[in-house]
Image (cartoon, rainbow, N blue to C red):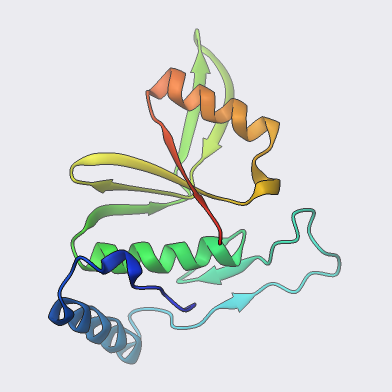
Length: 150
């Protein structure tokens, strides 16, 4: 698993953070969770210069997205979020006509509210993404939460 930053869990006490670390470690030892990252070595570099990465059987478009998955898994284990889903598709239909689909990086519930999240870098905020973002807001009433890589 890629290095996971626990700064999102600062509001938890040291005992809670220690328990989360122990749970993650025991899962790795028991083989319940993959503890490795597989990077795809392509013959030619991708257009966005990202490195495709696989964690826990999920394929991520970038290392940043894989790291964010690790952070969200910890938050789910701590009970901060619930129902974490990876790459959930949304159909975008206007007046009965299927326009396109949007696939979120992550969806989950925080404080009972649905959160749709997309990990972004400057080059990935394309015209197509902006249109899909507006369609998600107009059709489903969902505001996509953008998480920009550091």
